[in-house]
Length: 305
Image (tube, helix red, strand yellow):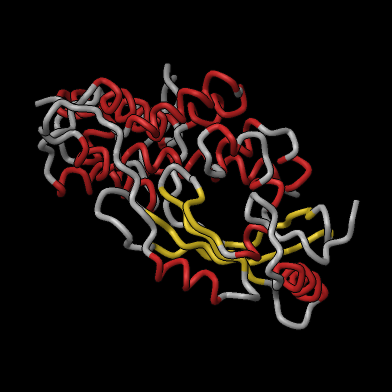
């Protein structure tokens, strides 16, 4: 059975774009003669991967169901895919396997109480849990305070949950919040791409991508680039409206809450002994109070603006 049209289009676009990004020099091929297409030709990829041109052409058209892991490995090596891109290719192949032709909305998994207890125990780190669509499904008080522009965004009211993709692309205030907005937007789009590879029939995910593609030209451009991210960490610089500039290290960790969908626990921390840690501690001190606003973010001891 062939994959769904959406899945087949994703496979075709991903492989064609990666092939176009490689030069003959990068794979050790001679460069004599004029080339009519950017990057490698299909027949060159086929030779390097050890398959027939006809077979690779069929693969690049999206007919990936039933392809062996050895062949996928060979194609991944030839196209010089990184670890995330290789995982994405295998996810596309897995999603293309025969299955009931139903596209239904996955029931959201409830966050167990012990996960919220874990989050609440982190008083000097901002911690939250997201699903694959980048909805925040649980957070501690410091995360709600740190990401107050997101929790208070008009984009949150659309589905009742803060969503990073909607915030970055549909709320102009996000450009003031993130020091490197482009990087945040690129990473967010690449994470959604990876999720679409894992769950191409997830109706809620398709609706989110459709909404962003319709409203945001910036998202459409980044989505068409077909970049993929699965594992990501680093330093993010945020302009917080109350405590100013914060350079924070963040680390996402896989969190096995449900077999139905992927979740990640992300923790933001400041370097010990720095002024950034002092400002984060100040923000944390404002959350250490029983008084909270209706949106769940702290409202006591905070300077008025």
